[in-house]
Amino acid sequence: MGRKLLLEHINVPGINTFQVYKEKGGYRAVEKALKTMSSDDMVEEVKKSGLRGRGGAGFPTGMKWSFLAKPEGVPRYLVCNADESEPGTFKDRYLMTHIPHALIEGMIVGSYALGANTSYIYVRGEMMPQIRILEKAIAEAKAAGFLGKNILGSGYDLEIYVQPGGGAYICGEETALLESLEGKRGNPRIKPPFPAIAGLYGCPTVVNNVESIAATVPIVNEGGEEYAKIGIGRSTGTKLISASGNINKPGVYEIELGLSVEDFIYSDEYCGGIANGKRLKAVVAGGSSVPILPANLILNLANGDKRLMSYESLSEGGFATGTMLGSGGFVVLDEDQCIVRNTWNFSRFYHHESCGQCSPCREGTGWMEKVLHRLEYGHGKMSDIDLLVDVSKKIEGNTICPLGDAAAWPVASAIRHFRDEFEWHVKEPKLALEKNYGLAHYADPIKVAEEVSVN
Image (cartoon, rainbow, N blue to C red):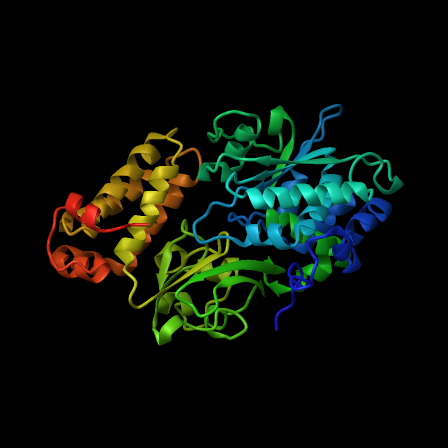
């Protein structure tokens, strides 16, 4: 079994409370940091650990911390991005629900390292149970002397506040999150300046994902070099994976980076194989925004080696034959799943969630949704397939934030690897409708939409 650093005590009764969490070794990192380490020591340990951002981008966390400007007389902020909105990803919500003090302890440790005296946890608005859980955990930590004035007699002060968002996917982008946190519309900012220079209220700010912040606790406890021994290459430590789709055991799993994709899908310790004895067709490995890969490419590299659950292995081959680890939203599709329908569903999401600030994204996501709708409902043309590829190219790399790329990559990769299925929808529209919706007749899109309940 792989080593567990974040979920080791997940099944201990009462682990969501301060008392039980502390009995299991919780808040040792805070005591160690405040009593024996300087803020520079903290940043150096995180650098040594090789920890990379667990929200999707995979940028080295210690390096991000080291960029923080430290002008005299200006406050600095740590902001936790808990606006988990990526389709297929639910591991941050799981962590906040069951072990909230792991995040609170990480917030204290991170805030101390950055010299922040006020920090925020920005939570997706629909997660009201998690918001209440976090607020209770903060109150417990404060009552025990781990928050507030002069924490543990160290002279260090810290307050943590939970801020609900409005339920916008775009606020997962750090500058849009900061705009929303300031009470404005959640539109991404043009960079530079980056948040490390001018972030929340124009002050130096670090924005980190829930899992990234929680992972700093075992790094402080065990040391950065010990943490770096786990994993493979530059993919160090453990990673939470949200596994869903056509598998026998959907759920949240903590893996050591470097585990083979095949073992993750088929071993009883993790996904337990494909449900109902079906064959694997494709996998979306890192949330809906990453390229989809067919079974042969997700299981093996071009040279025949097994593909691994790591940043480097999953991306090997570029987007021609690779994908991204992303946020760890691992969606498995069996042989009966329709790639066209799946791609259209993703496009509906990105069109709905585009903030509209950039015209390539605002208009392009709408065009992709309409063309995919046409293909899915039996009114597509062969030229529509190349049109989708062209539109995706026009969006990619031409927007302020990565939402445009996130919308374009799934469409381009689906056509790249499953073009024959798109063509089948054009050649055999009646069969496609019957397969996906049980409709044995050829209807216009409006009539089909009336007869079909689409989630």
